[in-house]
Length: 260
Length: 260
Image (cartoon, rainbow over all chains, first blue to last red; front, side, top):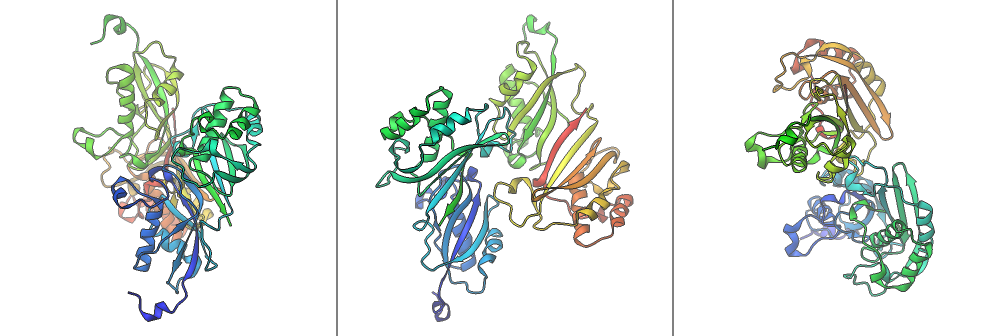
């Protein structure tokens, strides 16, 4: 039970920027009761740290879930706190000292009382790292898809150029997706080289389940088979999931940034 | 049992360059019988892959052991093979396809019959990565020591400048070290910045147990306390282990290169 003193204080709304290594997580989202033994989730780890700090449960709202094995450089989340004495930026060291090393709080700041990390997000950006050199070292492996060759980057970019505007993305979702509508606003997608890696970057207001990996898997599959650029847009327009290619592995995928 | 045909073939001596992520290993060296349940070792993983390829056990000779949690970018090792049909460089993809992702063979070549990865090594180089920015992301954490501040690099380099030549390193070993002599030939040590990281690089003909971490822990400890450059060389010359500082954590340490 809270005392009358703390009850009279307005709750502050704290926004976090979070990086995590998805390798040993089932994903972002807290699992229902029975899944406790199956593995860890990022949301649970941070909520455990928040509960230690506050002495009572504090729900954490993420901008969206990420799947098992998927990483984040800039996941966003918010929570309401009744701790008045800590300046907002001090939640960074306070939480990091309680968190396992594969979850790191990168930033914290105070947000308006109504701010909601999921509903207010305007754009999510993902990056997918393809290792194109012949020999990734052991330290790269959890963070790349090792392609083992350089694909035709101009062809990939020509194909990806249709990923812009309001688009029905039904061709690129997984069968378990429960979204009401499959239309998303895409801000664009591009490939660019970075050392031995090729980066695929894609931004949208929101994504369907496994959409990034499904788009990328299809692009790489078409490129490998020497397809025409128009074949990708034809699959997109067909809205037919059975025409899409294989889903790329989760290891190379990072939730890179969330804009509000 | 080998048939007469394979017995008459000369064994080829294959040299490997190996990268590994030490995070989930007890270290390089195969453990004795009872330690099977305690965890994995890198030597064992590669010997298992070699046995699968050869159909019989193949001992692997490493340049030296690395401790639990310590990484490698360029560990060297050799083995003798009776497989005649594989060109030496093809052991890279053959072994990588059998190995877990946290061990990667970077190179393989044929060495002279008498080549021995341990006895013939002339210089080992280690690098230790200190993260000096305020906020390492989750993906950096297994590969750095997060110092959280920039130390005085000029002072560190002044102190480290005495690490050159034939030196009795008794002050910087762990109590379990079983070396007959504690004199090593040091080729030098230096600190240099690399983005948000400070790299400590040290080369010697060989190292005592925990020597790199002990030297680095002492240097950082002296720097933090604003010591004079001479205090480090006084500890080195004392040969007195009780005067050295704390041992740096294993996470930031990489066996970087072995020269023959």
